[in-house]
Each structure stands twice: as C-alpha cells, then as structure tokens.
Length: 90
Image (cartoon, rainbow, N blue to C red; front, side, top):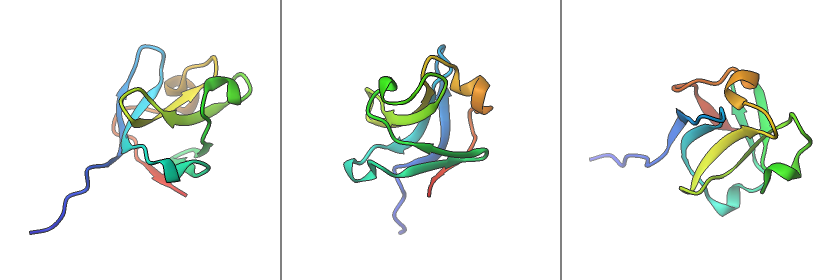
C-alpha cells in the first residue's frame, strides 16, 4: 500500500473575486517560499496590504489552504489562472 498525499498541487476553485484556491494545505514552515505557476512565481504575504496594489501574493485562507490573489485585482484574469492549473514550490 502506498501513501497518498493530502495535497493537490493545482488550482481547485476560483471565487467570485478571482482568487485561486489551491489544493495545498498551508504549513507554517512555508512562509517565505515562492509558489510557482505556469507564468512565474508568487511570493508569500500575510495580508493583501503587504504587497503593492496590483501585485500577486499567496497566503493561507480561512480553510487552511494556500490561496493566490492579487491586491485589489483579479488573480484569475491577471495571471490567467483556471481550475486545474498546476502550482509547485520553488
């Protein structure tokens, strides 16, 4: 029997703000890590206000998952993210 990962390294949901929820469970030792997506890398931020307006960030959402957003923007549109797009750690 093999062990299954509880994480799914892809976008699993887009909310009505355009934020992209991933299937990655947040871990505190991931602070400072760079999240790679097909178009580049995204830095961690604790809150939206920690990055300039229009810049992307990843953070822990209320469900404990890694979520990608753009401060005062739409990550789905600006980054071209959709359900099923893969992500990985750099």
